[in-house]
Amino acid sequence: MMLAGSRPYLILLLVLASAGCQSEDTSAKPPFVTVGYGLGQLSAVPMAPAAEGIAAETAAAELVAPESTPKKDDQYFIEFRSRYALSYGHSYVVFGRVNAAGEMITPEVAGLHPKSKSAVPYVLGHLVPVPSETGWSDGDLEEPYRSASWRIMLNEAQYTKVVTDIRKLQASSPVWQASVYNCNAFAADVARSMGFKTPAIWLRPQQFMTELREMNTAPNAAGNATRQVLAAG
Image (cartoon, rainbow, N blue to C red; front, side):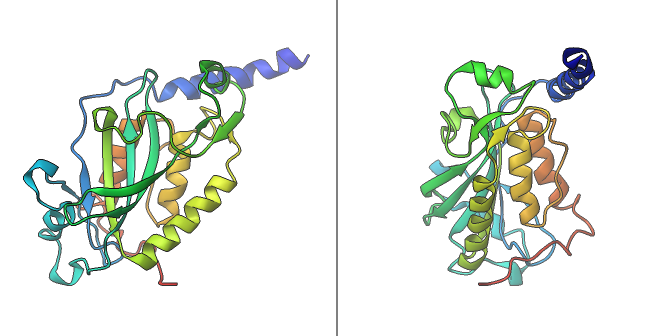
């Protein structure tokens, strides 16, 4: 009886788990950066290549209003990122500080994934919840594996709140399940804590991160200027 009764549920999980895998990843999207968070409608522009020696936040600042120009303490960031993998990929966030050239300084990573290097928990996690961890995984900070990313520059007060919310999510995410609470869902919770709209969690990570940026930045974010502004303190 238990097997028969659980069969429709298992079928539903398999359908949902495969729903995000119907498309194929494309070549890596250019990295985007947003400056002036909390100052109205957001814009996102491609980051300047590091080799050109142009700070990413400076390039982005040219496209925002003068009153949105970042202050000197806007040296903190959070980056919503996806990477390629042998499966359909992985979504996560990177956060920390940047130097004058826009390069990350001792970045931290937060992302939900099965708590094992074995493929077995990953496979089982498409059917039932499996133990998870919420930190770094292999390849997260390697540029050749990056498939899409959106960096948001923050001041110190904004950064402190974002990190606090991330820590709370890490402490309350004990399991991973591909159809119910996966890596996209974890990243979506971080985004929602910042007041952003989020796409469906069953998309491929590259598509999820691309849509997350597009639906929260101009021109797609029209009318979204009332999103949550991170308060100081």
